[in-house]
Length: 382
Image 1 (cartoon, one colour):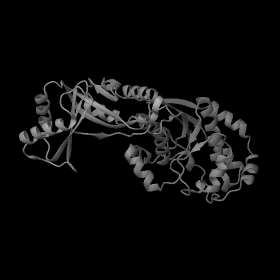
Image 2: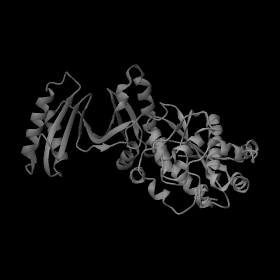
Image 3: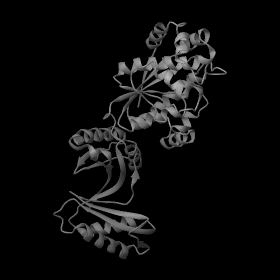
Image 4: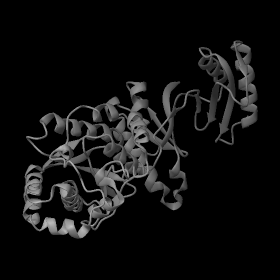
């Protein structure tokens, strides 16, 4: 008899002939997640198992953050030949609980002498007899005792929800424009949840933005890496570009021109990294640079797709998601990012592309971009 984790997965079931590829990815990601707690991971009969861990609660926390995991149950693995011992263990696990319960059974081993209804009936009766403070409710119970007859017998009561989604790296790679705000980490999480591997680009405007602002962004990337695994963060020096824009371009267009330079640089780095798309945290109408016309102006300068998963979300919805994934507290630290440097008093909300193109002729854009990329620092997190 030993403690074990039962790991369930969701959408991977839908992948048909590609399912072995997705399952291998998912299993490898779980192995990476539990390495520090010495968990042993293996797959058998459509189920992933974790055992031999040094800290069960930490192991559960790590596994439930792996994209593709639907839920995790701490369980007891035991021999299935002695059914009375199985019932006794079930009663022991139910003893500390109060309220109502039911028993569910799954008999994957069709050679087992009791079928699923018989297992549920016999185990439920045993629990009622030996744990009299519990009552049965088959429709809406407080607790469900799950008994699975596979190569061994597995008993579980608790089920911890996972992040679900698709295994990381099964749907390509994208580059996240990661600021120090609330929105961009949420956007990265939402795209990564669909199996997209991430790299990040952050624009740092020293001395107008502090070293603490830079560390804040790296901490946000580290928090994302708990879900996404190890990834690169490109820290791009952006001060010279912002100063040139501020000095040589119309004030009401400076934010949009800055965004266009960000997109151009991000695309260059994305191609270098082998990514196929960019990700931003923009939500339509949230600020002046996120109107329909403004978004069109920033899209114009790149050729690869731009994913904006927060585009239709209210700020409160984005905040709720940030709290849930654990990035909100860090995002709320009062260290400004480069988007707050040289902010115009009256930014254009309905810009014209021809005006912006003309304003950009005042800049040596290629030279500015080459210098920024040459000075970029690459930091690995996770």
